[in-house]
Length: 482
Image 1 (cartoon, rainbow, N blue to C red):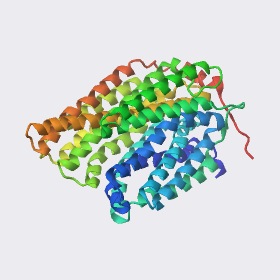
Image 2: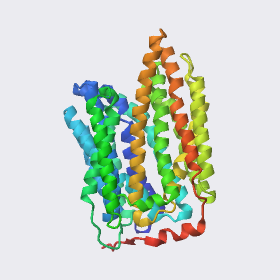
Image 3: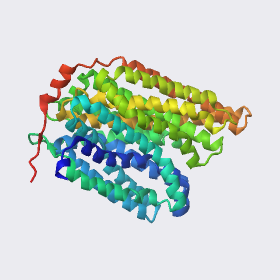
């Protein structure tokens, strides 16, 4: 195995295994909710916390985890995250009660938060700039595979074995990834001692938790005084965090404001949030339409969405390579256009009696769009970021991604429920009312993607000379291994 030590592609495989697990667990749980309710004797509200607890913890801690990777070494944080995530998966699989399961899912979210930002940091560290887009393409392909595998694998495991196996399946993957981490991933460390901003950690965690919880649970609590208070508290903590970070810019802040002087990083961080909103704006209503209007099973509904993920996985590496050669602006604009066109096509095709296979061309188009977005978006965000700030940049980028998902779920959920109630009030059948609602909700992701396209126009053209010199400004040294 010595010849694979620090080999970029071996490192990428290892990172992808960990990244795959964290994304798989965002989607695989949804399909098992009815079986969990029966097996644990829990209500729907209690069981939904199995989903929420994981997502909230991941959202709240990812900035801190990214900065910890800068301070303590990304390989160390990746390994700790893998270990925590794998052990928590075992605890989830053995949980005797709903409370124990939710607690284990929170710990799982902690493990995911520790390892997720380190993947992008290590890709930046081990791949030269001219090959980074291809690597990010593979990274994006893994995201597509996890999205595809979640509903399909979850449905198979629940049907053939038991809902507990959706967590236990992580054990062999986690153990393999942990072993490979110490065999092939280089131990990259900063060249001097660093200190963690504990006040900043507390403010950031509190702000992200209050905002994520308020947005995620707002509709279920009818946006009452308690939810409004949480959102106000989150905004106040966020303002306090920014003021605190402003005073610490010369003393290793959690969020170095220098990152936002880079137009590419700033515009792509905005774009990653917008794309996350758009993805939820399509997948959530469309999945409900397939199951509640066309009466497909959860597994069959997942298979209808499979062509999109398959195309995304196939196109991703090529889109990343093209972004390396010509810059990502036009690849991104192509992807955003295809994705928006696919959403419009789905909305136009949808009717109470539409055959499932009629959606295949539209889902292929959305897959092409996503494949052209994910890799170039990550590559352009990190293109000019100095390596010693890569963890902070990755933490900010991934936090915006998770926050976008929470905002997208809250926005489309509120829109879906309000429009469906209005359509039903006109006397339409449920199928007709939901179909009309799907047509209306499609406006949200399309509008968000148009805003994303305008954001892409801010991208700076690719400059090889600058690209070559920027990372060299502060390259961390590998730690001495014994």
